[in-house]
Length: 357
Image 1: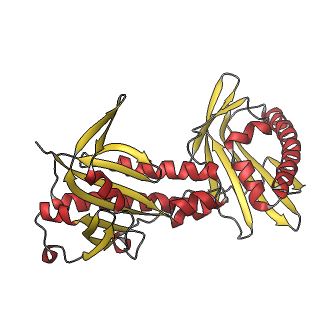
Image 2 (image 1 turned 45 degrees about the vertical axis):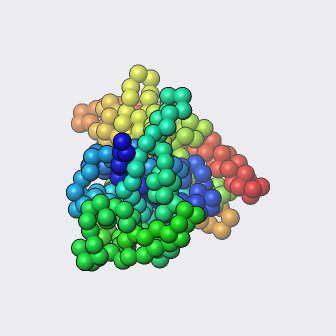
Image 3 (image 1 turned 30 degrees about the vertical axis):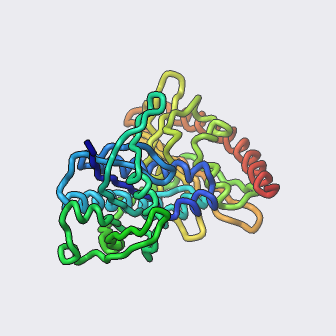
């Protein structure tokens, strides 16, 4: 007895160019985040078969209403677009992947057809001609990178004629198995972005308790990317013993990681604040240090021809009644002196590595 299913595929547009022309380390994290956003917004019980690079191959054997299918696509679209917008408003890193992530789009394909399964070892996957068809439909003549495509077999199953879907355009393409007709609608007009939640911190206006100025031989983007990279923090940052963070997520405004000092664990938030157009900045804040109500550090970078000027400001709001303020300031100053000496050497080395490449 034949069995039938709805095949559903969200596919990230611009993936190939994004991966081949940007830094692989951050591009893979961005694609991972976006695919997870799509999976998390599956509200109609679609089963995930596998992740195919830039696409999700999903299916359902219980059939939702046609309107729910369209609504599902729009829900994923909204969540995807909102997350992409964050790379523009909250990013710290200025690498090619983080800067160009806002250009990524997503398309959706829906196809109704037969389903059977193939087992290889302990892996079971859908198998058959209709699995091939939905993948072939990814290559089409639709003049857009963000759309919803619904195959003719799906329209037939739901008994949707052209008059019932006025917002869709009927089109067809020729494939190795024959001609496939489908309906599509561009999704650009369906994107309803909320006002972005821009996590902008107001830097204290008073003089900092600790202040440093230094010049390094580097360029602005290389320097800020190195400083903001938590994976490389232990190479130069001597204020803590170690860090714990999610290596699958990009460090941006609002990200929280943990700093370990002895037996103490501090939750530290990444900060972004208002900068001049020609400046880059990286900041952090924690409320967890004993006797310090708030610890904030702001690193501001600006380009001076062949060097980068780095300004460090550390603001310490001590608990009321704490008497050993000068000793704590001295300890933190000494740790920063050591850290910045190492950072200067490291940035010069990183700049040389990029010059050689």
